Amino acid sequence: MKQLRKSGILAACLLAGMAPGEERRLVWQPVLEYLLKEGVTKPATSSDGSLAINPFVSYTHIGTDFGFHGPGGRYLSWENGRISLALKDTQDWAGMWHSLAGQARDGSEVMDFARAYGGAIVDKWQPRIVALLVNGQGKGRLKMEIKSPAQELLWQKEVTLTGSGNPSPVPLPCDQIRLAKFLNWTAEPGSEVSLSSVRLGFELPAMSFERYVLLSSYAKLFRCYAPVTGMVRDRAHIEQGAFESTPATGLFGLATAIMAHPSVQMVDVDFAKHVVRKIHTNVEGIATAKGLLPHFVKRMDGQLRIHPGTEYSTVDTALYSQSMLLAAQILNDSVLQKSVLDHLRKVQIRDLVLPNGAVSHGLRDDGSSLIPFSWRDWGGETALVMLMARMIDPTIKFDGMDGNGKAWQGTGFIAEIQSLLHPDFDSTTPDAVSGVNWLDARKSMLKAQKDYFPAKYPGSFAAKMGLFGLSAGEGALGTRYEVGGVDLPAQELIHPHYILMAGSVDESPKAIYDLLHRMEHAGYFTPWGLVENITADGKNYLPMFSALNACFETLGAYHLLTKSTGTEDIIHRASRDLKEIRAAMKLFYPTAVAGH
Image (cartoon, rainbow, N blue to C red):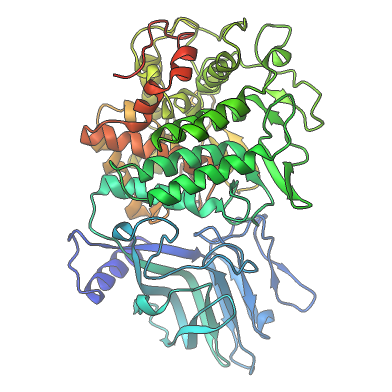
């Protein structure tokens, strides 16, 4: 694997007329590494003998779907990280298709090889896709094709395999491939081939690595955006409108606003203003319960409604509203700001306080059953809910949070989520609610995260590489949400979004970027950001584009960039300038002031 990356990158650099180390560099993005999660994504055999997969757990490395084609599908086998075809004694052909943007059946999403990130990211920061690398071996003819949504042929190349197994990059005419939907490979009759991966070569524009980390994180998040609903899909590879995330949608609005700010200038400002307005217009149309927004929504009968089996959530309403207020402030949109506040103040917060004096997690999907669990644990989620409650009703009385300064189970994101939005929790002054010095508590969490694998598994891949991130997100197989933490034994699943979330409290931003360089070399950091998770032994990782963690990564990357470069943090400035947030923040810091 490492040798492939090394030789492939060098060959592609020479192909593109560049020397390794120049500002414009070429990096590889897997479209799909043919990995299998045994027992979950091992393909089944359909009635005609061809392979069949479960699309819920099988997806590309670029947040799309894939499948098989051709009458020779019964000759396909998939095992040990390779797709193999034995067509020696047949006239049949077979191969695979990979959607390049969105689901295959959605023709509205395409990839422009001259503007690989697409959307509203400005041309100056757009990578170009200039090469294709197929890692395969065997003998026979392999036809590579790129097609439009209407199956029009945009590019093709026939590769003859001779058995050597040495990958050779193929140049792509990026300026001629502007509306690409499918990347296909087909083994011709008589071929015997085995493939382990297909990759695209991204020629990056000249930029610092620090800015690239921010850009790639946002590019991954942008792939989760669903233009049809104006919201953010919980996972990029699912259908638009099937499972949208309300908190991720609000955080995406904030991320888009900051990417369009003059200090960043990576997103078109008119797009940012349009999309943030569109987000709130659509969210205003969602039915609430006691004013609370649903955590997840689904489009049913043309309307966005709570996804069955999920909840109307206090913390997700807090995340959405505070993110959108900050976005409106950054974009200088007072009309939007007022609308977000008016919508927020419809929350019947007093009806959501439990008998123990703390705010409930929310309401069940029937819209009336109060969830019996409350926000009392120390950490960012509780802080955001308490801030929201004070913004709604400055006179409300509720019990405070625990004063132990420890996130539940030692879960990483809980100590950092509040600081993605507000600067106050960088203070060394103990807050007036829990009595905790938040900066010290966050630094203690970061140290515990960094120490976990060297102490528990000193010979592990994670310990040797310096990986950390016991947080929450998709499980190793991508089939359920899992929560880890430094206070739990035998933790082996790393969620690397915490690396960026905690970057702003790390004493050495350079050390964080050095780790990201190592992760890039190992294939865990690509042109579309960090992978979702990595096992501590380094044997498996999950390439899913998960929206909420993509939000955490993008905003964390922004705060890390400002710390590394010594520039003003515009998100935190917006928080200081919003009088409603300043008034609510006095709950924690009575001397909190606006402006500088």
